[in-house]
Amino acid sequence: MDVNRLNFHHLYYFWYVAKLGHLSRAARELHISQSALSAQIRQLEQGLGEPLFVREGRRLKLTATGHLVMDYGDGIFDLASELLGRLKGQKEGVIRLRIGSVATLSRNYQENWLRPLLSDPTLLLTLESGLLDDLLERLLHHELDIVLASEAVPTNQERPLHCRQLGSQPMSLVGMEKVWNGRHLRIPDDLHGIEMALPGRRHSARARFDALCTTHAVVPNVRAEVDDMAMLRLLARDSGWLALLPEVVVQDELQSGHLVMVGVSSELMEHFYAITLPHRYQPSVLNRLLMSADNRAI
Image (cartoon, rainbow, N blue to C red):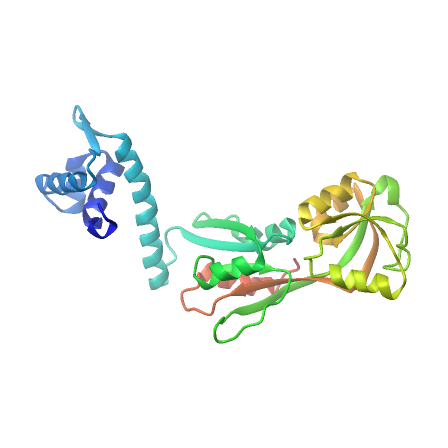
């Protein structure tokens, strides 16, 4: 069966019966005769070429194919309900918020930003990470609702994006408490020969850090270049090297005392941006989240 010949009306009737497990009850709730409902499900089975139910006593039991079709029906009709709710501005039902973030962005930052939503039982979060260009392409094709990034992006008529700065933090030097406690180092003056783990060269602050070192004739002993902030956090925690990263990345380790702050640079900043499309059907929960970000420290 080609998709253009799939009768979604018949699919809905099957899905409704499958959810209830009773043909007669489904017929009453759908305001259709039991014989007519059975006939439409049989037409769907004939079109698919597979039985969807077997009868066990007075109950209907799904076949293996029936389970598969029901699973897809869940997704199809949940999305249809979500679509109608968004078009009508309704708040009831589950709302899906699809978030993309660049792979280099701090996971702690993302969780802090999302924390106001975590107690909302009506929200289904989809979280993905990747390269910025790939995420923006998916945003433009309405496959994502928002992209979180550490750099601003230009907008034009061909790419009508809204880029909003959510906040920023200075880059910090952190190290193991038992190695670096009581030390204070200037960035970059005191870093010559110091063993360091640095953000990878794709990171927005890395080029500025390298330029500062060149200007001051400072050559750190770079032991690792890491794109992933979670891995950079682990190296800071376990290697004994100094790591250059935003404080939010290691907020838990600093609070526990396992890591200590050794230096902070006001010249090196990590910025956080939210990138969205300017369309009328943006989830209201996302608008509230963006507005609340202006009023809280992240």
